[in-house]
Length: 392
Image (tube, rainbow, N blue to C red; front, side, top):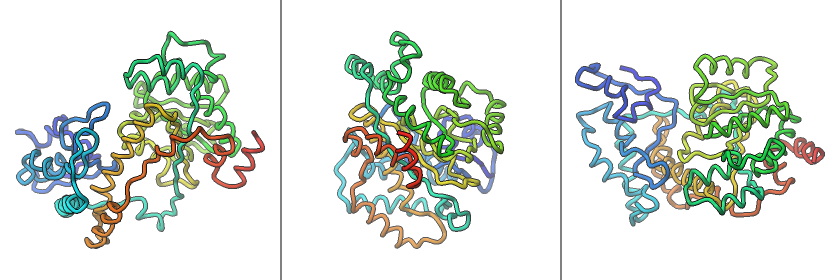
């Protein structure tokens, strides 16, 4: 039995899992899981919003492959959660114990897993590099007032950061659409530069209502654009993908919701991804970025993440970076390919444990970027820096 898009099996409560493994499910002497989605080793219950399901994703996949061996989640959770606990769940684990437990995890996974990364194929495919920069956005006056007035509900504070007009009672009219939001004001400064340099842009947000606001902005600025969200039908998804990737396509901006536009869609004719608001789950943003960095890409890809310093957005991004660091320890350092010696993976693990993972959000506590700094962060060559400075 070969299950494609096998990451869907990480939830044992799903209909797919029960259909394949239930009392009346399929029987097979061998099982194989294929997935192009990064595996999240959620080896703990992180104290973040929203709370993750209690199901152990990694164990669920192993349980599907060999239910008679991986028959209980409790032992698995107890053995391997300690090195990865953070926040309120954090326990005292010295580096030697942490290294030992991660090595044990790798030893368990190695007989069952093999991975091929894009980095492994670069020499063959000549896939251009991708890089990510954080653009620090200043609050508008209205946002400063609203942020202080809101109670501590995280969802509400995130809405303030994204745009005050997400609250109907603070809608001031389209003439104030740009100046009332720091992120949109910055976006309004960089989009003409990206267009002048012949780049094409994907903009991701988790909030569908925000996509509607951005659509209004694009119409006001007369940017040719497309919008894809959970509201879009399957037929519309296919048609929009064709319109975007068509030769000499006239569309400059493609706006997508992070969840609806993160998988199953190829948009490699774009070369710039703007993460308007970060997801608690970093793999959602990783999937969004992967829409452009894939086979067929001929340009250097740039990811721009918009963050307002000293707000809840710092917390979101810091937690996401911690989860990526955990995945790096649990999965990435194991390599799980047929070329890397086990001793080499142990050395890589030691190197990872020897240094502290530095969150990109530490930089966000600085002041917001000047125009010159923004130009350097969004440019891909000295010629583009000169062009952007001239436009300013």
